[in-house]
Amino acid sequence: MRIQNLSTAILVTIGSLLAASHAAQAANFTTNLEKNGGPEGDIILKSVTQNGKTTSDFSFVNKANILENTPIKLDPKKVETADPEEAKIKGIVNNNSGDASTDKGDKASSPMAVSGLKDPTNTEIAAFMGNKNLNNIIDSEGTGSFRINMFFDSLITADSLGIDNILVWERGMNSDLGIQAIDASGKVIGNFLKLLRTQQASAGYSIDTMEINNTQKVGSWGVSLKDLGVASLAGVQVFANSSYGGPDFKVMARKSQNVPEPGALLGLGLVATMAYKYRQYKQIAR
Image (tube, rainbow, N blue to C red; front, top):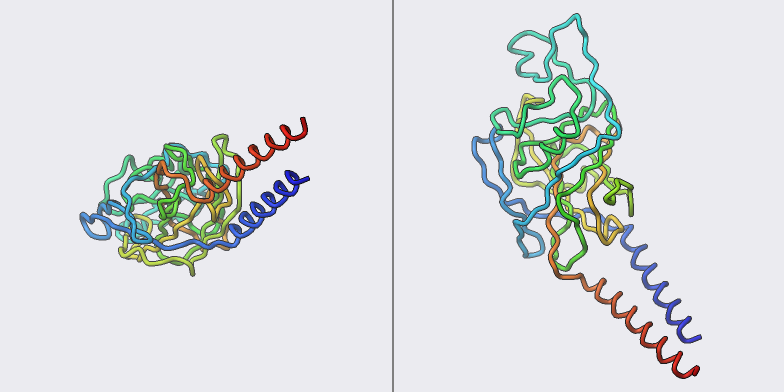
């Protein structure tokens, strides 16, 4: 009976901790970067600082799986472009149909050309997410919807570093973004979070990308594994529909440290205590 009571208490405690994590909100962090070429040029992430701690050890997206993305519609009777500045100069049509596409600063470097007037591929999405250039982003139009699985190059696990695990930047500070953890198979796990535009903090820089004709401020969200209701994840699923305002974003993670968080240590201690009590009980029963 004592073992059963202890087990019940542990389950109640764990349940309370998990319930509390569902109510957590995105936190803020400081973006430390190197600029080369102004808002249209390369903006390279150097490190992030949060709670008095700084890290430059990041885990990047190295694989993407587009589950849903409203396709681009072309008019074969018109000359079109996805670049509004080009449309104005050449007097042609600016086509902003579809939803998620790859985008970059007008003068920024990138691993490949932007998707432009064609729907992006899994490889293109992963390439634009998978680097430190904060002027390589995913642009979305806000008239359709997208759902994309993004896998990181390392497993993200809970630790006690004190810096959020998932880092998100959003151009314009005027859109929301849905996010949920996924396992190695791409299955969603934990909690779905809607990151609200009102929760963004200024990231301290602005960008001007090919799909817009002005400079916009960039905001950021920090998301912990506790926020997502998981102890580890292989990646995240990002989502938006027409009510989200067309988020234009960059996602990466910080690499996990080999320091388990206090909650994990407590859990291990409780398991060890249960095992010890159970062995004592068995010996007395004999």
